[in-house]
Image (tube, rainbow, N blue to C red; front, side, top):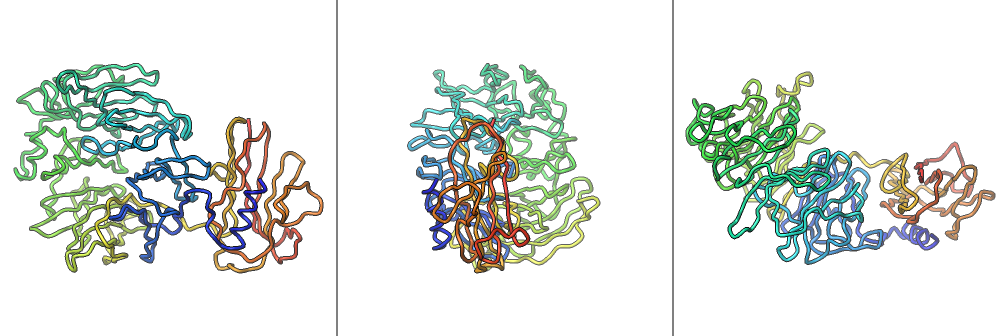
Length: 557
């Protein structure tokens, strides 16, 4: 413990980087992206571009989860704060913490990222917080489960010659998988893997193009290429074998679907609807779910023209008049954002699925690659700006009717935020990072306030501080802990001592302290509170009426 605090003292005094492993800094981030060199960068609201990782190592892929965590796949194993090496990690943008996952996942084993259509996220989770991902090692594929998000508790669910392409993890831990198996010839099937690892074949000789949870709570699947399965299917609630002759969307030539693609295409441009008709809606590259319960897809193969189709609650084709060829869709509350082209020029519009109202959002000719509305009223994107032939990150301010969250009230001018040296390899959805807290922050295992752990688990206490406009103010620095009626504090020699003649752990000017680990040990059963505080004036006395303090409660069971 003395060594850890000694390092913290060195950090505070010198302002140097705390080099105990890889660290992250999302402060001020609006957009996080991989540049052409696969460096992970952020763009703030003033257009400043800076690295997220320290050291600035090469990143293969990134994925922002529904919970707001950023999963990061590194190109080579790196040491983390716990002393272990990892290539897979998750970062929490709101508290600047990063944790490694799966110490066994080292080179040449790697994460299987986009396989098949790319609709299935590379990492998924269930309601219990278990994390699932696919790996490969010299073409041997595995499906793994990280129990309770604990980076060291890993279970191999599949570890044989089965290639899992499209897949979906249900809230209860049931997994639906479109599998490819070599049995003389390539053989496709749709399989259910129950939490107890029981396997059930749902559809044989059928390639799965997508598996999605729809707003009605059911699973919908796109199956193609082999009769009788050809179209979009609504799976039974019990996820048992289903009737291949009654698809949700399909062709009456091959079966009797609930909704016929030919009837849906009537009244629409034949070129526009061709990608949707040719595979009976089973191939899609994107699905969004609006806040008012609609499931809308970008149908068609990745390299062909695409059709926008509402699949739920009532299937219907969306054909905007302001765009001929859609290339990208995203949802903004109840509205649809659509990027694409019209008469050869690049366009960005909003579209109301309920009223078919359209609004042009962008007058610049920019080929948009990634698109996402931000929580603060701006639409952010990256793309190639044809005027000047430069890759840029930009934003547009937009306001909607707050009561309905659908009618566009006003559209601001395009603002070019940053010029990039090359085309981004990837850009995550917006990282919703609030302004950093001014003053001291202390966390237990990356969490604030109240944390419960098992007695066998390691406890990591980190402290960080943002001085704000008070940088340089001379203060006393305190790290204190309490268990029951017993108080201990850390003095300037980095020793823990019982309460008495309390002394600060350091005295000096306020400065920025990034998230820094000061405790990494297990504790016996009991209740503990850890404090990190600064007070003024700098007199070595704990002044209760002139203090900034943060605390975290830890229950060990």
